[in-house]
Image (cartoon, rainbow over the protein chains, first blue to last red):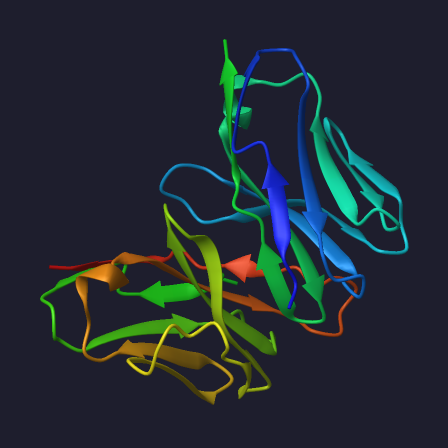
Amino acid sequence: GENVEQHPSTLSVQEGDSAVIKCTYSDSASNYFPWYKQELGKRPQLIIDIRSNVGEKKDQRIAVTLNKTAKHFSLHITETQPEDSAVYFCAASISNDMRFGAGTRLTVKP
Amino acid sequence: DAGVIQSPRHEVTEMGQEVTLRCKPISGHNSLFWYRQTMMRGLELLIYFNNNVPIDDSGMPEDRFSAKMPNASFSTLKIQPSEPRDSAVYFCASSLTGGPRNEQFFGPGTRLTVL
């Protein structure tokens, strides 16, 4: 089955700096790659996603890139703010079978 | 829409007791997922249903766990008998398969503590 690895497990940046989180997946058939943000004590919520026929997608301060050949995808957050502090999960999906990475705890220091 | 609804939000029980977690998906969604989240193992897919039919239950840890979806608006996850290692947050999520994206919407979760 699909295996998703996510790095780093923790990331601390200064407010205003950029943050990058990277994931790799194992199954070349995966075709949907969402990113979820989970604040402490709350549910995971989708922040951005990308399909396998697209290489890059941007939404304001966040962007995701996908390299199908290398089977890796990344989340980029620019101009980080303290409210970006949370745990971020990547996932790879074939149809409904979605597998999550282990998560990255991002801390943005004011 | 109220989103995915889960109950109870918190459950504290003693080892050996039966636990039933409930989920109501978003109206119109045809896929439903049960996840377990722990610090050690992260977010694990336990089972998912498509059109009320269980498609993949390979993530169910053992026979003590069972899930049902008797209709499109209700699902249960049952643990019998419960053990302390089952303590976790259990999330239900739903999605519309076949739509432009496979976005899964998560419920608020049930925090289960087994003493």
